[in-house]
Length: 248
Ligand code: APR
Image (cartoon, rainbow, N blue to C red; front, side, top):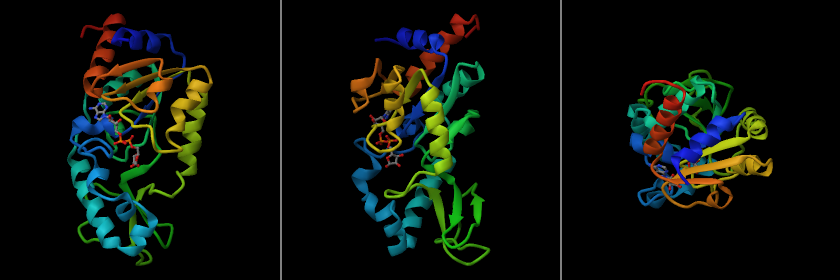
């Protein structure tokens, strides 16, 4: 299976979506969760990414998220993010459904982005409806709500929490309409997000996996590209643009 197969599948699709995970941002310097240098190899998720952990020790949780924000806010989109944004502007890609909280898809220019697990660029109060955007990590941690004085938390989905219903509904709407899904850089082990490629498969759609290693999604993939996301996506977008008469 080759890049040519992916290009053919993309050009013959009527409703192409992308489903992305931490692997698409690895080449932007953002650590993944389950690779050999993965965050969950060094830290215990139950100590840092659960509502109980936050109740128990909000300062520790904020120290970890401040460290992640410092990495993410300095990171830049890579060739894979830009290639997906270009596929959208060429009218070939309908939407990116991402598990990532790093904002790199919209920072690369993608306009339809569903952030299933929230975003490090947003915080919200645990005591009232106050919400805010961040462009840099909070100075004092744990930050306090300017309205009610309660703690602010990162607006990300922690283990044991439901996905934001509006985002999950958007993702399902796209998945049920999709006839092709580009699955890029995800281990496919966290639900319900990992249902997305299976929904496309159940509807007789084409599943394309771009990953450097096998995952539970490999077994349902029609096309498997064992390649880093940046290189694979750059080759795909170049071939598509050449085929459409663009000079590369
Ligand atoms: N190119 C393509 N794939 C890559 C690259 C790369 N350069 N680097 C790593 N990968 C692959 C790995 O092989 C792995 O399959 O990306 C995947 C990353 O998997 P995870 O670290 O588990 O990340 P993800 O699938 O996004 O995790 C899902 O788990 O902890 C929660 O909320 C968190 O959104 C996250 C969810």
